[in-house]
Each structure stands twice: as C-alpha cells, then as structure tokens.
Image (cartoon, rainbow over all chains, first blue to last red):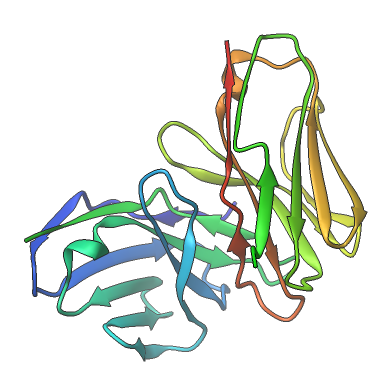
Length: 111
Length: 112
C-alpha cells in the first residue's frame, strides 16, 4: 500500500524567510505529485503539481522532485503570514487517478 | 460561479440515523471523489466515480453508499450513523487527463 510521509512539523518561520516542506513516498514507480494548501476550516487547494525530476517554479513556490531518493519538497520564498496553513503532499496512482495524501505539515509564518 | 459545491455545510445528527450529503460540480470534469478528513486532519479517499461508474471503493463500511446520477453529481448516503463517522467529508472533481483535483467546501458531520 502506498504511503506518503510528512514527518517534520509544525514549522515556524519569520516573515520573508524561505519555508522548506518535505515529503517522502514509498512507491518507486509513482509519477505524479501534488502539494495542497489547507487553511484552518477550509478545503484543500491545489497549489503545485510536479511530474518530472527537478524543480518547477510558480511565483514564490518551487516544487522539487527527486525520484531516485523518493522525495518531493515545496519551497516557499519570501514567506508571508498569509502562507500560514497546513500543507498536504499527495502522490498519484497511475491506474485510477487515486491520490494518497500525507498527514500534512502545519506552517506558521511569524510577522 | 461555484466550482464544486456541497450541501449541507454542517450536519448534526444522532447515532442510528440515516443521512445524505450532496455534491455538484460545474467544471465539466469526468471524475468525482469523496474524501473523509478525521479529527487529526488526515485526508483519505473513500470513493471515486468516472462518468457515473464506480472506479475506487476503498475499505469503507457498507453503511456508506455513493450514488452518481450524472457526471456532475455525486451523493453520499450513510446508514445507521455511528460516533466514529464524525468528520469532515469533502467532495472533489478532476478532469480525466490529470489528477489535479478540486475540492468542495466540505460537510462537517457530527454524530451525537
């Protein structure tokens, strides 16, 4: 059974710093990975998807995928208090579009 | 304007009752999902339908029965509610070509 691990956290960074969120996965054959942001009391919101080894940048967010080491990370540059939320890492199943989620990392950005 | 909507937003009921949650998406997506998020915020897939056909059915008690009357709607009926069913239930949808799923606002179910 697929597992997605997000073991570090909660994470607290000062405003303007880089926040680094990490995630490891168990299935070496997995091809697709996602980061969702969930504010307290709200629904998960997709912020990044990554399918190939390397980096993918979108504004202040950079997703990094290393398939050899089976980890995926999310960097948030110039962190803002509005980035304070729980970040969920998810792995896609090639057969049937199922996502397996990690337990999430709670990020707090201090003004 | 709403992409994925769910009703009701809150549901408080007693043990043993039967209740339904409705979901609708206007994104034109082919696949819809039900997730359960427990008190520890762990988000777990329950069911998925693609064009009204069930494609994912995780180990969920058979008291839970999804129904998809058309590809824009996916409802969840729960029989004989138990205390452990208390959670937030999210509906989501995605286009066939990607796993990028879009979530509804959630239904907070409280069983007393």
